[in-house]
Image 1 (cartoon, helix red, strand yellow):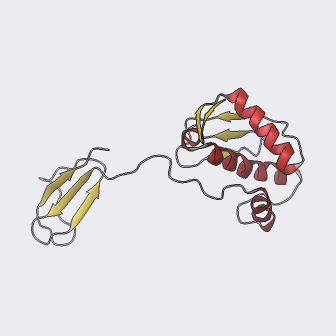
Image 2: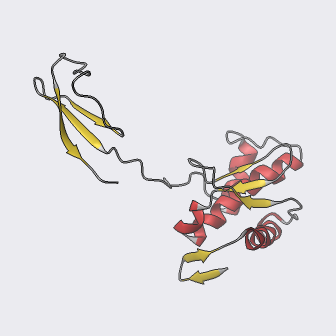
Image 3: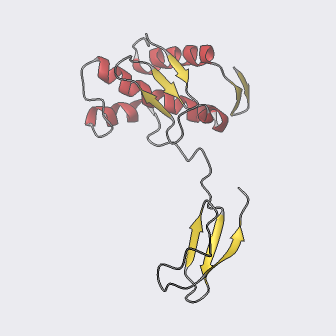
Length: 159
């Protein structure tokens, strides 16, 4: 794993596995005996713990943010992992989970990983109502929902 300041430049599954095993022993005093891998299909979450296999999947976009965030997400998923294996309530709302997450300084929420900027802004010509859309709409067919007036494209923003 090549680290430049607080930024991770690259990390593969083997390095992720080693890092997770070290974090598990250091902060939980328990070994991590299963697999942790990157899953590029994850979009809105930093990671997930799989109940059936006990494996953990991490969103690769977390690596591009910072090492501190990656470690925080790993700690979060390890809280689910260790509580589940001990037979305790491992859900986000449980008191055990909240206490363990606080004790290990894991992250509760991951900041937004992908930009969800609205790309098109439409304005009603009659009442001025604004509409934000990700996709282009047909202004010949669609009208204002407030006054039934005609719409016009005000701005096209590049993501």
